[in-house]
View 1 (tube, rainbow over the protein chains, first blue to last red):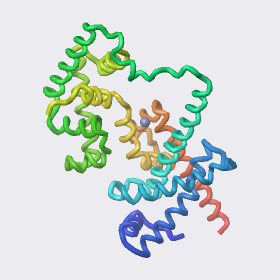
View 2: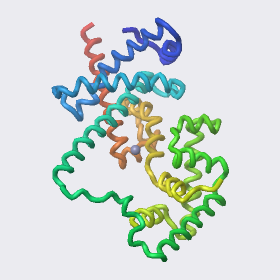
View 3: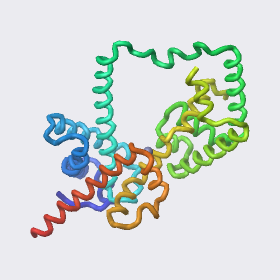
View 4: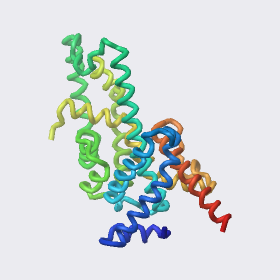
Length: 212
Length: 84
Ligand SMILES: [Zn+2]
């Protein structure tokens, strides 16, 4: 397997044809070697699922790496970046599987499945509480209008309300991730301070709306 | 544009979620791990990452897994060189 500099990796992966195929093949081999070290913390290599999981994660990681080549900033070895992406995929896959298994167990153990909280929303909330909530929302709206720049507001809506990935938000706002983090951090601090001056905290607001 | 009530709450929830910090940490996690491996003082150079890793188990899992991989690969390459 050839060793490449970061620049050579990027060049090969962005090219067409043989150079790209060879680079992908090498990446696959690098992940096949490295990933089991990471996974053996959580799942035994003797587990019949192990090999399958490794293969599944490599597939997904290669796709994601190609999609995100432009976000590689060259602050580490390219292969370290590649492993980082594969590990994130692997861990969320493991968490998803574990969650699925444990929720199955719970279904068997508890015959009385609790009603999801969202279905209980508003039950038992008297008219005063509703008024209080409406007033709260009104104040939050005002705080947001008064404290945030249009750009900060837009970024928060993209990320927090519409759930658009940070990369895409940076592109839409014609900025980069680092500048976007800075902008979000400033927005967060401004809002927190102002809410505190109004005698409100984000935690308190969420509790008021989530526990009915 | 006026935000709906539920959008407003989503926005507040987003402000409270550690998600943003996790993304910010993930962005530099490869760099952080490499600094640590070179036995430089990663915690001093990137203190916000250090602080986050101490409190966020999700990111800490990712970090430790990445360290494992880097260390084991380094070891296996070291062995190979010893044999040459
Ligand atoms: Zn985190």
